[in-house]
Every structure is written in C-alpha cells, then in structure tokens.
Image (cartoon, rainbow, N blue to C red; front, side, top):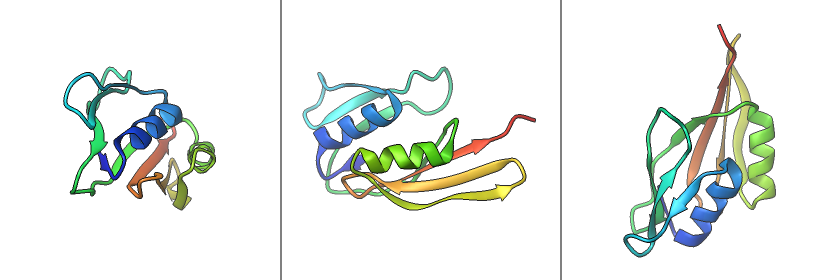
Length: 107
C-alpha cells in the first residue's frame, strides 16, 4: 500500500495491527510482515499512485475501527452486518488510503 508519507503509513499499520516493517531496502518503502502464516505479504511506502482497498480479518470490527480512529485514521463505514455470520467496516488511514476489516464468525 502506498500513501503520501511512508513513515506515517508504516507506523500507523504497525501500531494498529502489530505488523513489523523492514525499511532497510528501497528508500520510502518497507516490506511488511503481518505475522500471519497465510495471506498476502507486501509492503508499505509512499508513491504517486495511491489506490487499493485491502481487507484484513480481525477479531472485532468495531474495536479495530475505534483503534484506527485513535491512531489518527477516520472511519469510512461500519460495522455493517453482511449476513448472519460476518461484519465489515473500513477506515481511512492518516494518508487517506481506505483499508477494510471484517470478522466472520466460526462455522
């Protein structure tokens, strides 16, 4: 994900989700370790193009949206019930990127 300010974008997601960011490579970009054994691994940085909506599975949608707001983000929507077992929501990070979160109850 690219934002307008690499350092702020990296710090925001590290604080929100506990991710680690390795910034020793290319300037203004860091490889992100989400500490998940599955899913997409990627990077956080700054650049001209700023668009992508990525969703992460979280334990509690409302709690995650509230935490994002407390770290300088703003709520885009949610939580919204999708069906009887799933909730979704989204926030804008401090750089303006939209990031989605969801929780699906166990089967």
